[in-house]
Each structure stands twice: as C-alpha cells, then as structure tokens.
Image (cartoon, rainbow, N blue to C red):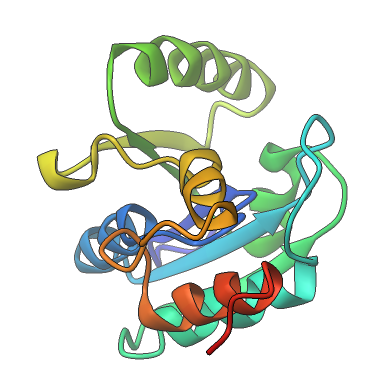
Length: 165
C-alpha cells in the first residue's frame, strides 16, 4: 500500500465551476496528488462531452502542480479510486442537503472499501450557491456566468450556446 496521499475528486463537472476549482486548490494542499475524475452521471444529459470536460478542467487547474484529470465512462467510484491508487475521496459540500446526500454515499463506500476515506470540504461561502445546472440555465439564456466559472469554461459555454462574439 502506497504511503502517498492520493485523493480522487469525482464528479460530472458539466461544466467545471469556480466552486470545483476552489475545492481542488484546497485539496491540493492536503494531499500529495489530487485526481479529478470526470465521470458520466447516467441520470443527467451532459452539455459537454467527456473529452471537452476533461480539457476544460485540465486547463482550469493547469497552475496546480499535483493535480491531474482523468475521464471514466462507467464503474463504481470506489473501484475507480482503487485502480488509481487513491486512498481518499474528496467531496465538496455546499449545504445541509449536499451533506445528507454525500453522507449516505460515504457510508456506502466505506462498507465497500474500509481503506478509502471520504473527506468533505465545506464550500467557501462565496461558492456555496453555485451549481453546474444553475450555471447552464443562466448561460443558456445569455446570462453572465463569468464570475462563477473559469474564463476558459465561460468561453466554451458561449460557444455551446451560439453566443460567441
């Protein structure tokens, strides 16, 4: 077993937000390596392809040395964590609703693999109201989302919705 602290931050990241970026920046100070896992959420219809999401996230975190991005189309998060050698899962929590949802998943993951620890990072207050689905809704109707997403993601949203200058 590796003594290197590797954390997997799984999500659909559709799109990658400043809240996600903040979580990754903070996690990068706690762990030797942070792996952003771009996973397919089977209950959501994605705006961006897995490759687009990977590229947008990778560009957004390029300034953080110990972070890399992977895509995975299917499989249980806990098994993917094991494959990646991750012994921690990172989850960003914005509110009580997120906590209740994430707590149940964490308990389930713990039963499946007691070696992998879930770490909750409380969202900074300035990001606690941001969700990818809200950002897509605002961007779709030409609203300004530049304060909620990295610049490259903002440009990609404009292109997706045919609003590029």
